Length: 307
Length: 331
Image 1 (cartoon, one colour):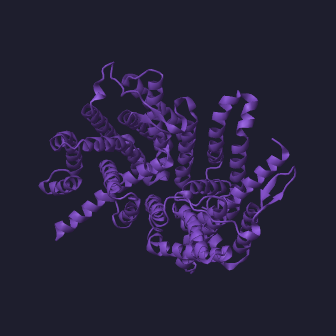
Image 2: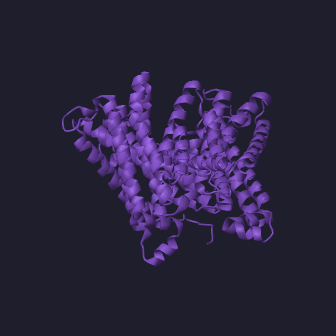
Image 3: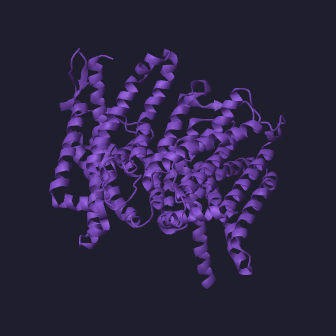
């Protein structure tokens, strides 16, 4: 467990955290403002990645593909809102879970039908290829730093938007008590659509940014969705600040747990059981964390809903 | 077959019979006669799929007890199936292959797990409850993948079906079918008796208005915990049956997708009806089988169907059939 290795894993943890934040931000707002459980949020992330690959193969330029994919993801999200989600806001959570589960099934397999089951790849934009040296001759890929940087920038932008603009004020008010906001004469349907479209775009953005360093495949949105739910539940539903802190916490705990659990366990047990138990404990860590947080604070760390 | 049962159950009301007796009677009669039909048509797969449907129906009926009558949306019900299945698998790997030990073990382990996690889960409400039950199912899932001596990720093949008191009674598929049917019937009757009892009224009261129930003097959470433990034990029975029917145990039995599918089964049939849970499992698993045979990516068709059911068929298939019947009745 050298210092450099530790630093690398911290950076990886941050990168995962930032990615989770991009997904969780939309999820927590949609949830907080509209009281809508959108399981299909994860497939928006997958769709972002697929669209980026598709547009890249047409235009051959990452930036152009990024913009086009973002717009397409937004358009698709709004289409889904119009066709399905809009009719579910008034329903109970169970109906929402099932309908969005249906959409997951559909999209996960639709991309397989369209693009095939084989994983796709997207090259890292040329300007950001290569890596920089961080101590002891260990290299760290520049693109990962770009992901961290852009994620933090989005977080800062979101903070400013939510804290200091009229729209942000409405969103915060909506998360606290949507009925009251509507009663005060705000067009709540339009607010819902803006929040929803924005959340969709953020998830798509996360998918596009991560596409160059992972393989783009069907079902890639499912596991990350569960992690994003863990994040918003720990952070407190409807709270951007909670989502940000919880996302970084989960990213770090998960990454460091996976990297060092075997080494730590070896201090107290024989090497071979440590090798089998370690990964299992590492995978469980965040769920244990969530269970503990919910046991102590049943509505998360920073609950937004003021009732 | 199912459609016919629904229509018959609805039309039966005209003759004054009670629907809540007719529909389950028809379902179980159809299930009891199915092996005869399968023997006549020599369609062996029919027996297999019907067994599978009943295995999951046991878990789905138990889940409906939570979702439909307590308002507790548990996303972790697959954990109990997995625990029950692993109880069978591990005992069998250790040389104990008798149902007289394995079945109680499956039930006790599941109930114990339900009791411990239930205490934690029931502190939370609504979405937080969904998520914390999910957390626990994920924990068990990862524990199962780490059990290297019992197959780890790959799962565990069981040498032979459980014997009962040393006799290989369940070896024939038809005998196992009827054993599963008895388990399903037992589960169904137990849940109905619970719901009809005073205990069940407290649960429903807690779902409708927890504050008022507290005011009358009931600690609703304690009642919910008991229901959660019972539903967990029944999930263990389902796991016992699943392990024996497939003669294989895998961590995939308790993936969160499996939990999701169980919820889909309950909703598809109609929440809070118990009959709906059985119909929902049948429709879901049959749809899966038929569509999958015709089309590799059958979910492309099934997904939108689910959305349509939610949007247009409130109350699931049972609700839909009632609506349709009413329309026909008034026409």
